Every structure is written in C-alpha cells, then in structure tokens.
Amino acid sequence: MNSHKGNLFILSAPSGAGKSTLYKALLKADPQVRISVSHTTRAPRAGEEHGREYFFVDVDTFLDMIAEDAFFEHAQVFDNYYGTSKQAIFDMLDQGLDVILEIDWQGARQVRQLYPEAIGVFILPPSLGALQERLDGRGTDSQEVIERRMAKAVSEMSHYDEYDFVVINDNFDTAFAQLQSIFSAMRTRRGIIQQIHGDLLNDLLSAQEGVQ
Image (cartoon, rainbow, N blue to C red; front, side, top):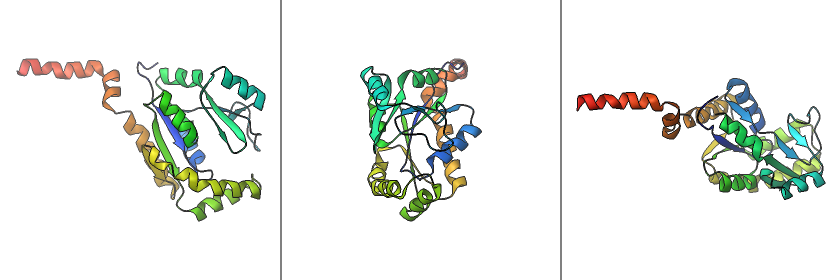
C-alpha cells in the first residue's frame, strides 16, 4: 500500500464525445487508475451489469441515500439521478490509487467544493457533426433521446473552461496519449514526490551540509 493519497480526476464530456472509450483504454494500460462506479436511477443498457458500469437503483432508494448524506456528489441529468459514494472514493485514494469520476459539470462543481484538489479533464468532440454521428452510431438511444442530447451538448461544452485540462478527441491515439500524459504528470507534482520520496530528498539535500 502506498503512503500517499492518490489523485482524484473529474472526467466530463457531452454524451458521444468518446470519454468512456478513452478511460477504459486508460484502465487497461495503467494499473494505478480506477474508475468510480456510480449509482443511477436510469435503466441498464444492453450489456451493462449492476455493479460494473453502475449500481442501478430506483428513485426512492436514491433519495434515501441523499438523505443519509451517502454521496460524494450527485446530480440529475435529463430524467435520471447519478451519484458517487463517498466511502468508496476515499478508500481508493487512501490506497494511493488515482480515481476517475465520470460526471457532468454540475457534479464536478460539487466535488470541487468538497475536494478542491480534484483535477478536471474535459473531453471535446472535433465538431458537432462528429458528435451527431457518434450518437447515431451507438444504436442504443431513440431519436428523441439523441435530439435531446444534441440540444444539451452546447450547454455542457460551455463549461469546459471550469476544467484544468481539455482534450479534443479527434484522433483516438492522440487523445489517449494526451490523457495518459495528464495522469503521469500529476504524479510528479512536488507535494506527491515529497510524500513518496521524502527520504531520498533528505539524503540528496544533506550533501549540501558537507559542501558548505
């Protein structure tokens, strides 16, 4: 177990921008990264499993959890609720793992209030046309749902400037490399290096006494 806390990353994007494909590739490539499994009141999509993609609960259960202050953050998106367990997040961070919260900008604001150290990454599509094509190509949502998502996309993307990093997902390999670089760079911040390599730093600086 590591002696330092991991980094908390907020990953946001309009639906269809490709954030799920990117973070799933990152999970496979980097054993230090975990994805937070959120609770939601929406129905499972084809191939989704309870406890893997989401914890699927009914509205009454979700509202009870809000009343119990069980969520790190929660928000209503379209007609459904989404929330993240506090205990699950802090347990992973205490193990030195980097945790991804895949949430929208509303949830991101809640997280920053409770955890200002959170690092925000916003994924953008290369164009609105590409976004439309990706949503159509899923084959999982009705045309009405797709139209609603497109209508809200501009509003969602207008909050990109609330994030620390922005990745434009035009070419997957390029976008993935950028995302990996962000995670790697955050692990070399001075405060983290001081926690992990405190003894090394003390040894290196102790040599100054002999020189002086």
